[in-house]
Amino acid sequence: MRSYSLIAPAKINLYLEILGIRPDGYHELAMVLQSIDLADHIHLSASSTDTIRVRCEHPQVPTDKTNLAYKAAELMAVQFPDAFAQYGGVEITIDKRIPVAAGLAGGSTDGAAVLVGLDLLWQLGLTQSQLQELAAQLGSDVPFCVAGGTAIATGRGDQLSPLPSVENLYVVLGKYRSLTVSTAWAYQTYRQHAGSNVADPTFEPRLGVHSGPMVKAIIHKNAREIGQRLHNDLEQVVLPKYPQVLQLRQAFQDTGVLGAMMSGSGPTVFALCESYDQAQQSQQQVRAAFPDPDLNLVVAQFSSTGIRVAS
Ligand code: C5P
Image 1 (cartoon, rainbow, N blue to C red):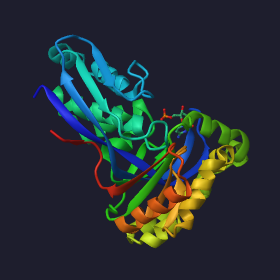
Image 2: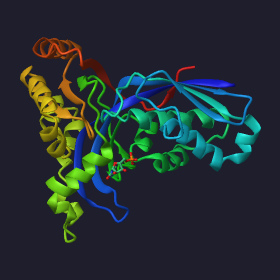
Image 3: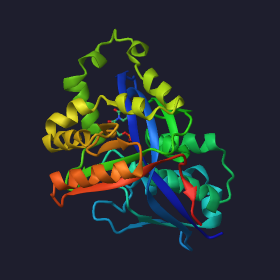
Image 4: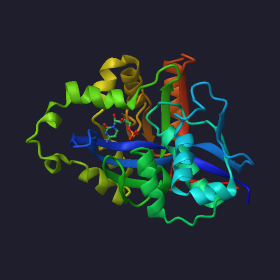
């Protein structure tokens, strides 16, 4: 086949704990990650040239070499020069539906889709673990985006252990369109101000892990408990800087949902809901409280899949 269309889902963090600073400068993490059915659509087609080209109409998405989708194609071309020479260049079209710089891994999932798509287009037959190794070279969240579902992520966020899927839960995602947060900024600020213990060289990372109750709640498919165990250390730096995000989180909580939390480095906050109806009601109540058109509210469902082929 000369072209593939792929579905690239967003993720939310049900749990994010910062355990320490690693020798490579990244942070040692314990996270629980969950795919949702809000997804970008990626189209890959072989071009007769020897170039990589990214198209995207979203004004906040770069189409140059800084785009993770571009970097993914470049990585594949370097790793598999014979295939690149045989099949030629590639045109990558991104239909961007996931909010940008939002803590939802929108860029990472596009990169993951390009890895999976080029594996198919170039008929490489890579294994899941080979794809994940390549994914880790692109970014900490990219391996999870390849596999998707529900997983514990440790290390930089790239070491994955799958968890049983929890499919019939819903979220309302709330994001101010004009507000973006840099992940690097969030971690650096955490390191400087909030997490003095992570910079302590005597700090013993393993003692700090508290994700057990969340993992148990997921294994037992206990939605109420999952809602109570939501946690994100990066809230400590992002919420004080953006009071409107804190207010939004509180407003979600006040609608009687299972729980509300910021995802990743934010600024998206999500309300965890036990049904589609509850999610719609929460969305309507928050919309009534915040009629600001800059606030984007979307209902999404938990999903058990990562990158998948649409056609
Ligand atoms: O890995 P990725 O490129 O997605 O990470 C973006 C930035 O987030 C990194 O440059 C780093 O500043 C920060 N980060 C971190 N520790 C992690 C993951 C990300 O400090 N485990």
